[in-house]
Image 1: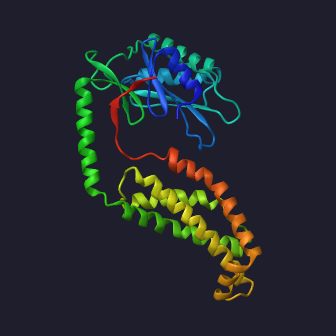
Image 2 (image 1 turned 180 degrees about the vertical axis):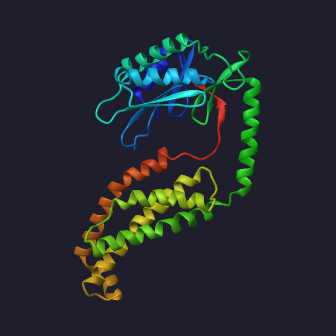
Image 3 (image 1 turned 90 degrees about the vertical axis):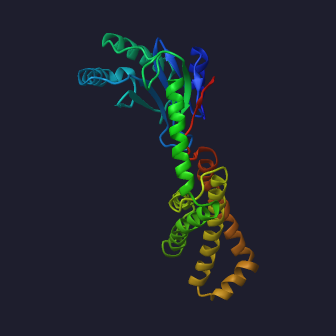
Length: 308
């Protein structure tokens, strides 16, 4: 999801977009701007700038300048990578202002010119400035020439072909999601019985481990993956609440048969069950948003980027 300030930057500068961010040139240098997902805590805005390969001397100079000017530039942290610098702006209490982002842009442009770091309107792989285009590379903006694009595309194709050959099917992934959910369902029930707490917030943990289980058994990556994990999470929540009610009735002295009968006929027991289902569902909304709208396929992607 592209947030409003990133959209404003893209419109003003004529930039391009990925699924979750925008990117393009600013005064000859190449920037990416994006935000953390909606379910991220705390929220962050990310700005990255392409530098190309840096000498140790320039790396140290940049690091010194950023440390010295951190407070003025208002970023939370930064990381100098092999060919880029990533900045984080924490948005726990207030959102990052557009002026703050542009101040960082201008500071970096001036610093790079001072250090004779070349502008980045060129292929970010081989350095040529011939036949270059804007591409979405795994949800990150990049400039590539035609040759480097085709080389990367062919490499991704071979990697994907190998991965698919090792994958199993959706059913295997579903079994993995179920198996990895069961321990947390049991923990949910034990928490209610022995600690006296209904662990509805466990819905989020179950969703996370269902995803791990799906991948662990090499379930097929595809459109149905997120719906299978979503369905597994809903079934797990229902099972956990049913088992919790039955376990509490048994703890109070009922036999399993009596507990099942009470669950079917006692309106008070039913009311407790439905109340817990509603609470679990409300807390599970975070997990469901993550599954349906945030969780991404592990597929490698490179394609021509669309202009914002």
